[in-house]
Image (cartoon, rainbow, N blue to C red; front, side):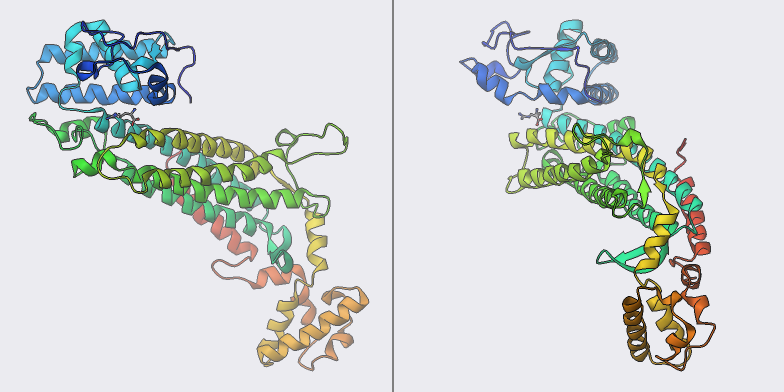
Length: 487
Ligand code: ARG
């Protein structure tokens, strides 16, 4: 995912203005009378990180040159020469033979300078009618749109794995919690489908953000547009953009799309951290609800018995990084006047880190989450402990005409007796239960079993096993629309 490291970065190229131009002089050096300080050159350079989207920079340049040709701004021969040269630059980068130069500041000028080395003066015509300001904004969008597609693909794979897990466990019973106290019995499959729902919203958010990422700034030039008779619809079509940024000032300075992506990524990481937290709790000896395969865990250097849930812990921690990048980007843009400001060069590293952290976490989850192994006996035993069917008893009384508040009181008394005797509601004698309310009949025990409790919640969104199965079916229909090979 990172640019090929075998390409070298050289600091040795001269930074002195050279009246004969060519390698060694800043491409904008014409009006300068003094060389850039070597510290300043290194400090202001972005090539160390923005070479990551060299491919997209070249893709944008090929489209730009093609458009210049079609609009009669460059000749056909010139365009052909430029495109051939750009292909060679791409080959050198792919082969790890490209010499990245800090003196040439960024990916854009490195590529253009090498192009001119290869094809001569005609290479200098490529920048006609464009600026690095619209170029960089275009590159980031081309790159990010691909990364979003990759993230969505990982999400769909993860979700598909969750559907399989949920389907196997529609009638595996565990305690459902509120306040982390046993509340009501739920199907483990239902819990897994709750995770699935969270990820549905994440996928929708990313797809929605992609529409605004996929708008083309190119043609805005430095800030005001260009004096050449360009046709932006040609470049937009060639680059597969859904639309064209409608105001040149906005186009070169807008980074909303990066903030939106990072914000969707933050919500997604927040979800992964919640799932991680549950797995970490459930893996503890105190819960004993699940195991995850050993490949996601590590041992302790001192305590031989330990199997630590490192992967979920790390993902929980990495959520913090992504939130941090969101705040970085928001703060970066705050108070920036129109149009482009050099501040914007600081958008790349947070965005790269956000994409890498998110992608890495998802790759781990795609393999880990669907492979958690529930311990059915422990889950069931835990559900039996917390008077999880108390609400079922209250509902039973209500169906027999007892007002809900009175029913609540009756069940409270029954629970108090259970606690005193150290037994569950279903383990109390019929006569013991009946002393609290005459409305209690001998059919009550059907409603106090865990299976009865689950089966009774038989409506859309409820935990009844057949409802969980329907939810899995709906989930499969949804994922099929993405046309992604999930294996
Ligand atoms: N490396 C710059 C960036 O990432 C490219 C745009 C530079 N534009 C300028 N006017 N200095 O933002």
